[in-house]
Image 1 (cartoon, rainbow, N blue to C red):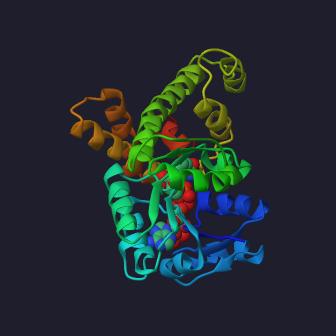
Image 2: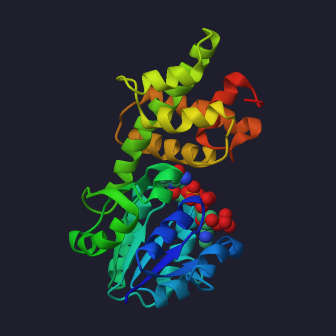
Image 3: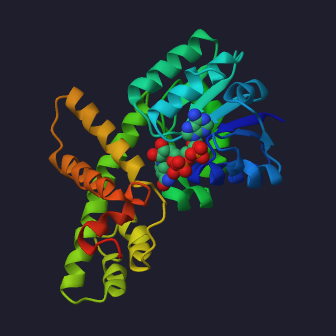
Length: 290
Ligand code: NAP
């Protein structure tokens, strides 16, 4: 049976690998902090000492690290994936990263006789746990078709959006939408609380109407329990909004609402909440106690 490689065992990577293994796949893993792979190794994943070794041992290699600079390091760095013989292999980057880096990965992969797909996801930590992620893919169709059976082990909705980088552009479109739902939910709760409404009841009622959205339905209840754990890190959302705004600037379009969301989240990070989940935005109104 094919061995799948997976580099980056964080909030998302852990659950995705768990779902791959539940579906009978052999997985070789590597993470910067080794201890985060202990549980998966205990369940049957195989630890490798470097990204290069993961790539050598696997036919399809997934990466899901934090920031574009982490992606760069895992692929182009010393002991990186591109140091391995990857002829005929497929590299799949699930990190939310820049479209230009996705193009560079695909070009280098091609030079080495391999293929690369950019495949960022949406659906949060719960989507990863439940194996119901949405996957937005860029790259060549032949490689995409070969990876579809693996996508099925952790995703529910997946589409190829075009050549390398188009998966990341689709994810940016997604994050522009999320900027609206997160700020909308936050202001809705601030308003409803001041108006003396019962917030559980408000969330339940709005969830049945045209204001219903994923952010409110999933993060609203966490806020009411003062649960600000990630989820989806504030620092990662700021990274995404900055990428989206950079790309918008290049395309000469102005996105004022997204700009404001980026300013609000940066303010939250400056107050020391960058490692909270994105639902912590409400702390700008409700203070650190929640
Ligand atoms: P995370 O918990 O920080 O996971 C990232 C993992 O990558 C960490 O375990 C980190 O290692 C590892 N890593 C970073 N640089 C590395 C390197 N050079 N070599 C090996 N491992 C390295 O973050 P996450 O929430 O899983 O998110 C991962 C990516 O998915 C981000 O780009 C994020 O924007 C995106 N995303 C997240 C969500 C979500 O809801 N969480 C949803 C969609 C997309 P350490 O353990 O040493 O830190």
